[in-house]
Amino acid sequence: MGSLKRLGVIVAGVAVPVMAAMSPALAQASASTVHATGTGTEVGANPCTGAAGSFTFNADEVMHTTADGSGGYHFSMTATSDDRFVPDDPAEPTYSGRDTLHADAQEVGGGSTTTYVQVGGIRAPDGSSVRFRSLYHVTVSSDGTPTATHSVDTFRCA
Image (cartoon, rainbow, N blue to C red; front, side, top):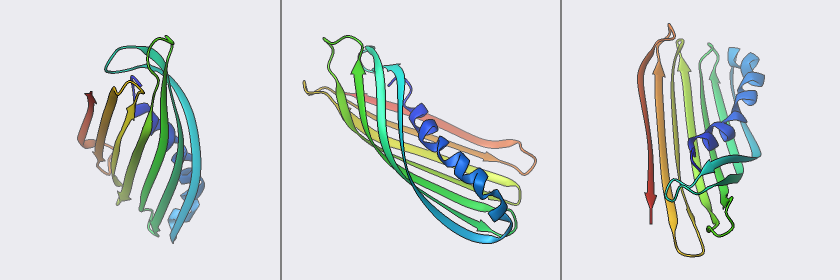
């Protein structure tokens, strides 16, 4: 749990092979939708208590790509995930919950914009909880220079 943004990278990692396989289709106007599932485990720490443990997720994903026929495209992905944090110390509580991830990428004229938002929460049987929100945005010009970046991770412990 120490790095929930990696969940988005892991889940979005499913999208990269899909986009690579579609690259020939980008030369012509086309649209496609792919449904997938993803699972993962990451070692981390509870951001509220510092307890070490493992964060696991099981995600259902929908990815949609529309190519404009001139090399540009719009890609969007929404994933919902059942999440669980199991601490290494069995005396610490186990948390479970759900989150939603949305990623959006667009390339037009060689420039690109990518936005990623993840929101969710997990709760333990003792009533303690962690709510989280991550937002990442980057705009890259046609020469490959980043022109705007924004990154925010927020955790709320209760």
